[in-house]
Length: 243
Image: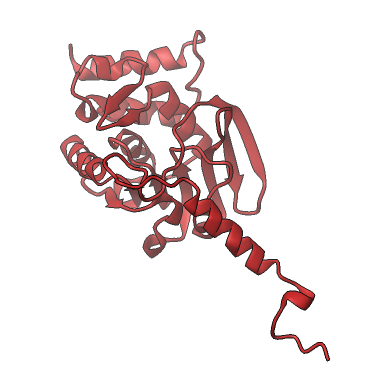
């Protein structure tokens, strides 16, 4: 069957009152235009509303992508960072909304970076930048960003990501551990919470597929150490002369 017809059916099902997942017209147009079959092996299965697995990474269902992008609220021309590019499909949808050269995507898994680059080029989004990075560090060279989307769960967004957000920017991520909810944070600290979601946790170096070491506490230890150092007051400050 013609992929364009399959895309139309996919979006129609997401917009239908039975699911009512997709309510934003612009996101609907973007998902009708982004060729999802270019990112998965099975053309027909690519347009079914279910997850897939690729290179040890979960490929989100179309309904999950729709929820993420709608919460992100991307506008034409927005400089956008995607943390956890996966196979690249979400990046393609966002590229339809903001322009492909405004999309920057990173992933901690080098095989996934290569996969996403090939998929995006095949789908016609050569202008999307994809790099291999620890997602918690963001992409400071191209900051600040108007929009940041994290496709992995965390209890709090890593500080570097918040620091790379423009004053009027918006960051979207799944908050929590086993129980998660989609949350949007504005640069001014205001928050908006959406429905429950289920995402894999944000990885650090050593946790990606094929890595030797696995240490989930490393980033948390560094963050807590920084917080303690910045909260030192009074007698803890060595430079104060108390005599």
